[in-house]
Image (spheres, each protein chain N blue to C red):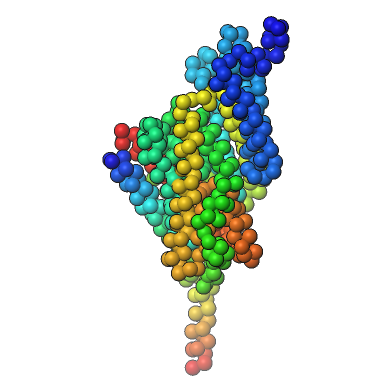
Length: 56
Length: 403
């Protein structure tokens, strides 16, 4: 009986580790594909402000 | 008559052996020829089954009288443990160097893993890690459920865990786990495992047809949002981080993790010359040598272990449970995604890369020729390799504590 319990425990542990590994993959992927502030986007917003000021 | 027996020793050993050994030898010769035939026909995996079948037939025909009067062969002696004797055998048996320096230490398994790593694309598991992981974990049902069955059939916990690894359908992992947990059964377990891995190719289509009705088998998975583009650098970075984390978690399985991820890293680094080597000569060369060695290890004296019949039954139970578990996982995903998932994909969680994924696509195409599920199936397949390595690590670490 204790063997059955240990086996179920190991299967549950495998699920937890699997979930942990999936979370790491998800975090890595989300982090790598997230749109951060790039030089181009900064330059674009600077140009936009400059353009608005000139308009005034 | 005496000169005839001395001249044609293959026949004389057959005539002078115990009838059980003789009949087993003849049976294995026939089985070997059958494996070559089924491999050539494409019913079983030809890459492994053709060299294995010929090896099996040849070794059982090549038994001869050795100078000390015992029966043996000039191919390999897997049971030799004495160092001095091993040095003698290394100079006589022509496959002994490959067995000792490549097979029994798991090197051949690692080479095959490097090749598999070089072939697989991890884009899908990066985009949808949770669904791939869920399918892979469900498809490990046989790896766990076979242990109590094996123990009820009289095996020890270590032996049971080793044979249960067949449920992961990952040859190198079975080889590695049995080498550590049940070295005395390492040869029969590995032979049974590889023999059955060839059978998944022929057996799983029937399991899919039995458990997944036609109306579900043709479902094409649809996505609301287009997939984000993934660059090679992203895949490279993810592979490096994952490899390091998994090795931190399970150092016992780190040679296998390293081998798998080094293949992926080389693929994504654009090192084309090395990639060509690992997915070509290294992978095919290792598979070929593995096939030959597995065939040669199917010698009657070696396979007539009283536990072999038990192992044969347990191997098929493990793969059957894993297949059922995988399809169960497919149904769980089907309900989670409210019908937008093909339950047959679940069986691809059984990590026989890429056989089970190909089997799924073939079965789905028969019902709906426009449905492409190979991407999802390969995602579950690749994740299956990772989960099997995780479970191997769990077994090697935890099983000794359960005694």
